[in-house]
Each structure stands twice: as C-alpha cells, then as structure tokens.
Amino acid sequence: MFGLFKKKEPPQEPPKWFPPVPDWRPTIVQPIDQIVERLRFYTNGQRDLAVFSHGTCVVLPDDLADAEAESFAKDALSKIFNYHPDMNPTPMKDGNVLVRYNHPAVNLVLDSIAVQHWTEIESNHQRALATDEALITPLGSNVFDDFGKKALFGRCFMFMDAQEPRVTQVVRGNI
Image (tube, rainbow, N blue to C red; front, side, top):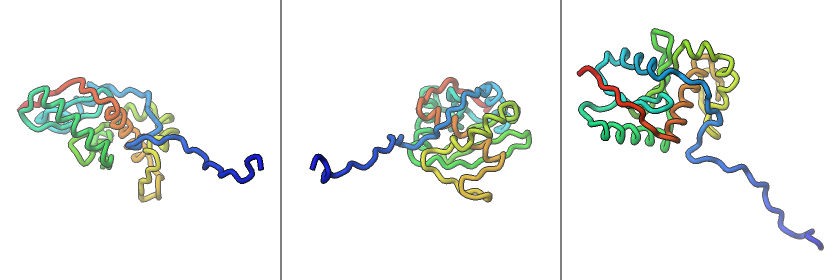
C-alpha cells in the first residue's frame, strides 16, 4: 500500500556525450612551432597546413585562400569527429608518432614531450579512449604498448580541437 505496488524507476545513467569523447583532456602542451616544423619536414615543405589551437593539422589542397583553407580544415575535422575517429598511428624515424585519420588531418606526438611527461601519459592512456570505445590491438582489447599509449595521447588533441575548432594559422608550402 504506500508505494508497495508502485513501478520502480530504473537507475539513471550519467549522460553520454555524442559523439563520444575521451575523459582525458591533457594539460600537457606540445609546442606548435615544433609540430609545424616537423610536419613541414615530413612533407618536404611542399604542402599547405591548417593548424588548430591544440596542434591538430590538416593537410590542405593546393591554392586555397585563407578563408577556404580554414573552412576545408574545419570540415575535415568535423568529418573525423562526427563519423568515426579511426586512427592510423605511424612511428617516424625521429622517434615521433604521427597519428593519421581517414581524412587529411594529423596529430604529431613529439617524442621529447612524451618522454618528459611519460608518467602522466602512462597513467591516463585508458582515459584517452572515447566513451564505450573498444580498440583491438595485438595485445588484446584496449591493451596498449608504449607506442599505442602515445597514439592515444596524440588523438586526444584531435578531440579537443574538434570540440572547439579554431584554426590559429595557415602555413604555406614552398610550391
């Protein structure tokens, strides 16, 4: 009587963000000028780049005006963020990790920064997974070696830039 037969409400789950995002927003700051310098080296200085505030870079088609470059870059980042943030990390000869996506955007993890902040990266890499995300590695589901931990760290910056997309500079190649 006093509520004995009242239907119980299911427990409320915390709200989930859509698209899913990682819980970790690194406070580690990578020097943008070093990221740009390395990407210019990797592209032989031949490509234009749009650079976002957290270091995500979009490789641009040739001959875009600044406004077109910014629009193209924001659209590419939106496509990654809103559809599926598949990443393809690549170890570079200089020890850096280049994180590529299925659109022309990249994040670069500078080895010197990763070494300097390794304890924080290692202890937070699981928080770099998006909500309910499962990544299969040779070590198992959501089990990462040091290379994978660096890649997840780098991908966090893409999520941060996608949530607050601000192109801070367009760097022109030497075409």
